[in-house]
Image (cartoon, rainbow, N blue to C red; front, side, top):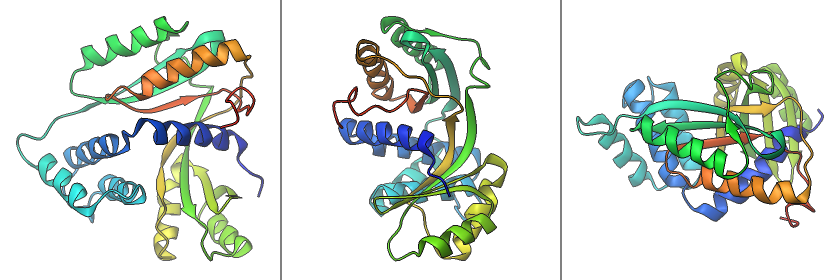
Length: 246
């Protein structure tokens, strides 16, 4: 099946940022906390927590850290986070979608708005990017010994829209409503993804020049460095020259 270039663009950018900022564990622990608070501390009966644990393991988070996070979230003194999203436009009209988990919405709104303003953008109304991003299920796996053709057919059977093989990594894309069935299919095959979840994939990509890129990069950096921000999506076309050959 054809490679999902739009997701590859975002994945490349996201991977570079994750490696640089070193805040992966903080964000994963917050996701575990939200999952426990919204369901139960038992991953067998809480699919969201099961997914959060799976993603934490995929990032090599120690088992003790995961168990401590679950225990803390289960207690009366565990933090309560509200999930909020922001839609806006960066420099040159770049679409930027921000997902947050916060214990102080006033602080988060103020911070995110200030970042957009500082770097030539502005927040928009909820829903303003409705037609710019599609919500898709994305599964990232290590290829290992998996056979391309056989695995692809299994994934299509499980509801996959797209299966991409690149540098030892497999990226499987599915419609949001088929996320659960594909996850079940992987469970049946005893395959645990390195990362899985619903992502926002741009329907159209935007090309920008080097000057705009430099400002845009600062906006993305400051957003991703904020502890309240969980994920940042954009529709900038990947360009090695603009990114300095990352």
